[in-house]
Length: 312
Image 1 (tube, rainbow, N blue to C red):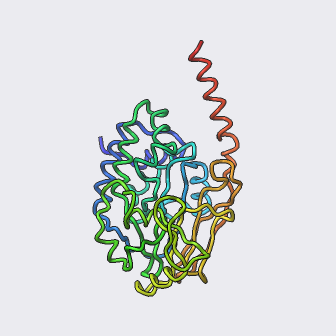
Image 2 (spheres, one colour):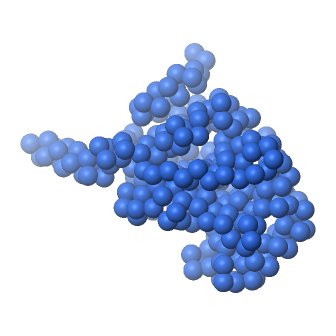
Image 3 (spheres, rainbow, N blue to C red):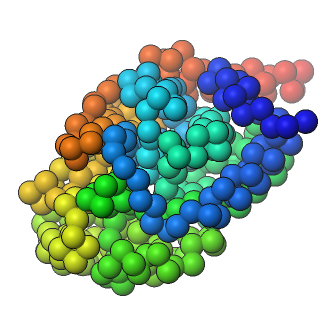
């Protein structure tokens, strides 16, 4: 039977899990699609850029309510789809189906959490086992993560990446020749692209407190943009209490799309709309109301009930 992606998307929008066998097929087909993509994908505006989501499924639906549903809005997602939130499986399942259904209108960039090592620690692995009874689904998705692109360029003007810059990369052409089809290494240019952060108080590169990647300052950004004849760097990766942050005389911005991060941080979130003139507009939003009726408290209650039944 041919894969009915529209039915899969409809099911996922209702927050219903797909069968394990379906996800296997979806991940295989997505790998075939992603394999053909460059490490640097060139796209045109208008496009709506989304930062970290971290398994906050209801907030992803809120993003579609605010920004428009695929394929009517072009989307660029900057990574960190899984971990920490309660619904990583539903979130990555939906985004993968949307990419497969509308490959030209949905771009998925790899974040530092799209890795085997990180997802084993921060929730996605455990969630897959809890929801499917084994680790197969985790294997399907983490194998697929190895194929995700590392960066996107909008209209030859805006360089988009999950984390930031690398002391090993001066020209975007150097990104194009990296071997990305692998687990994210502990160090080197690929690690830097997904782990690094801007530091408003510095000019150059410095050791990162995260233990991976670097921090980088105003001079680094200025040089990178000059060499590559670009205007702006757009990235995610860092919690912003207002939902976004703009640095270095509007040369770099951070977009953060997980409101009330981990269901407790109290932060706003945003999506960034880039129009055909290259103008950027941050659309700021709060946590979706559904989080109140299906959040950590309810999950705890369900788990307690399940434990009671088990012992009875």
